[in-house]
Length: 415
Image (cartoon, rainbow, N blue to C red; front, top):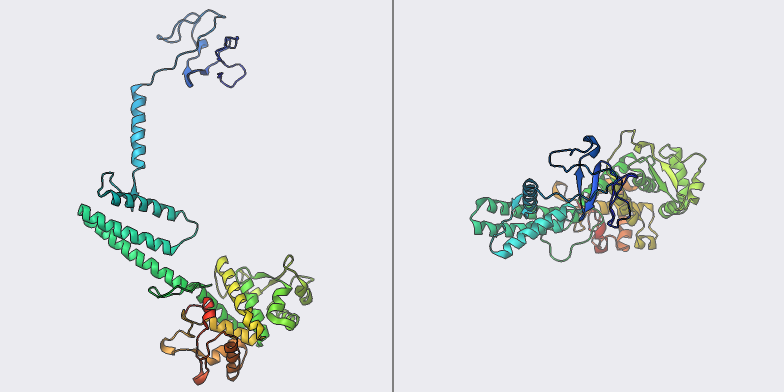
């Protein structure tokens, strides 16, 4: 084995006696048994004298210097090591809810459960995404474990902690149910929703903005404004392809796009025409700008990147519904499908109930869809035929009543 200072003139020891021990420098010395030690500068003492009372006399010039023996560990260092080990042992003590779980806690099954629960809560905090169902289950386990711990130790504070855990479990479960749009104690499997309640509220704000602020009154223009608004909602700009535009508006896409540009609601890139936009492909989409949604202007709504993408995907699923396409539903019918989905409860019934009663005001629905109130019934019939609305839908008494078909429930806006 060889060791050294790493410098060109340093001391080297390899145990071979091959003449590599003829130079000495200050600093880190030879190594014996894998341990390194520091030694004093021999050149700092007069020739022939030890550098300290305990040092041996310097050997004559040219005499090989034997490797020094490692110094014994002192009591102070050993005590410090013991202290450090003690501190590390304390740091490793099992904890949950800022309480140390005693090593001698009985029954042993309770101690193991508390230790595992503490680890599980800490692991949950490191998750990149929340899982409310899992969190509720952890709170349930904590409530049961702390209740037993309180009984074993007769500690009232532990029982209070158990009660808080029960409340946290119930609240978390309610939050998860609201997020999924299902009853807390509902029977059967829950419907997997595309939108959360909060995202459904954002969707309704966007639809109301379209209803009152669309630059042109026709259903085709309103459908284009809705879809383009959801593309540009955050930054005022968004990408579209010819496939998008023709899927929304069929043969009228170029005309509608040009009308929106002429009205100043939409700005196309320089040297790009409406026809060019219809020819754009997914690998080279056209970037459109909606001036009223640019962040430097007062904006009608605010939501994050994830919500914008989720709302845009939700609207695309509604507008592109396979059965609506099969029935060749026009823009007004598709807008009605979007509006009914956004304004339905978790069970599919239209409207929020309350003081206004069931259903949706017919004049408001017609205004959003670019229709006259008396024309809404025809499009309701088309949605029933496409399996979007259940058969009992009607427009009597100035209100649209009904419910979404079961296949459409995942798209409910969760009023």
